Image (cartoon, rainbow, N blue to C red; front, side, top):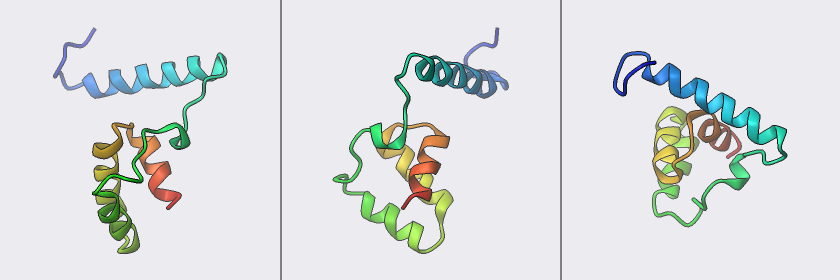
Length: 82
């Protein structure tokens, strides 16, 4: 098993997240951006929307992740929906 901070730590976390998503969907507790912590009132959401409008989606996703604490896929899906 990889130790925290090892090169394959990120891959291990991705596997855990996929397993958790599968488990949650199997018991009917799916997770989607609509279940995300409320980001709409956050002061930096205007910045995220401006970045989306300027086609700077990667920067928008990074900030959205900071605001909500969501994973990369969920944040990307939320930004793509904007």
